[in-house]
Length: 111
Image 1 (cartoon, rainbow, N blue to C red):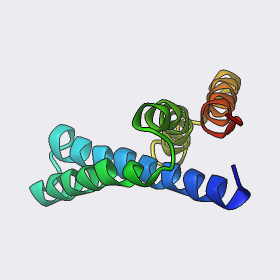
Image 2 (cartoon, one colour):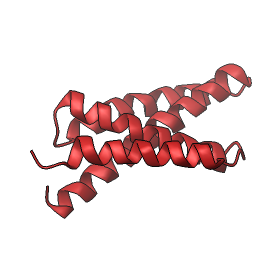
Image 3 (cartoon, rainbow, N blue to C red):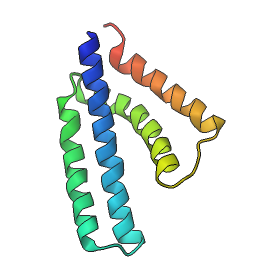
């Protein structure tokens, strides 16, 4: 796969992850922490956008979503660190590395 396609694909994974985690976080705040319903509504809209972003991946649905799972894991660890202030430990980092290795194998191996 050409480097430009890999970079575009990775950017789409990150955008999808931010939509899923960010939208889910806003809904969480609304439902669990009694935040404004507008926050929950915004979260729902962002989650709907998450449903569209992966459709731009060059791979098939199953392959794109399988690989996205690995990106999601790493983004969730980073979100927890940045937003919830829970620093990843060495096992989180190792697990994230394993997941990203899987992403590379699933999405970018020559076929």
